Image 1: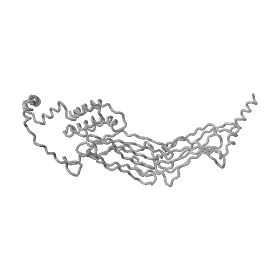
Image 2: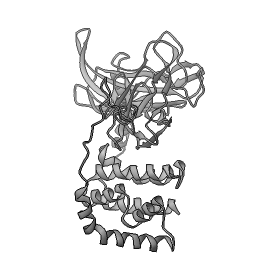
Image 3: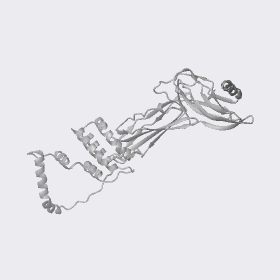
Length: 419
């Protein structure tokens, strides 16, 4: 029994020594390689690093421990890559992990050591554990030259501006969908600029929720953000939207830049032409109407006389004991049967024709605004949430809204505004 304990004690001293003796300095290597550059990076600017490992001893199990990266935001750009290579004729196993670091403060920042916990195997089958550490790396970071709220250091940027249809040649009552896609290389997705507020004059603008997609590549993250607006003329013949400007810092050329999307006219087709003219070179001639015989009118009056008497009595009832004016009669008659657009809106709703219903709803709003029944600001606040689900189905990729629900909400909102 005593001999057995002595043997166990001897093994406890021999095995660690055996493990240390089995590993030559060149057998296992782990290092941090920082992307070479000729300038000092700014805060928020992407820094690419590679954690590289070289292993000449067979590995049974492994676990890479990442240190707390104090002072950095970080992203791992894909899974670890294992591959074989040859070193002085000997086959070796290699590891590569690519990461993007984003310094959060200026000064000297340290990338702490990575630790690779390994279970190794000797040729005789003996297994032992070993912790392989990289050397720490120091990086000098400069303070960003721009304000933090607008500081955007990018390696590449692309802005695309597309319209669903020609914004200056819209069909009456229709809207154009504007899609702006911003693609940026080398920034964290959460630091992408927020959706800008589109402004203009004489236009109704409906903003849609933004969408973001991020793709991880060995050269850094690529983030795409999609901004969408539905735009149509609000009142009058036409309107316009103001320019959109995107400031950024070019990390490749080391200078601030900006991209500007020019102002855009928004109008219904033909509405900028004088009344009575068309888009051709010559004005359209006025048709000459031949005089008609009035002999048949007298006989027709006999038929319509009862109807005329009924309408005359209705006018008296509606306006009191005196005859109503033509405008008063028209308003009160329309309050009973509705305006042409109100009747068309009801027909479109019953037919489940969303585009037509939206067109007539917009014409109803325009008529109310022209009559000063409520302000444009009130209309934007009340109507914009109602049109959002309908427009998502018509102009975006959302599901089609129930037209009956939209009609009920639209009528209720209009009654509230007209009080």
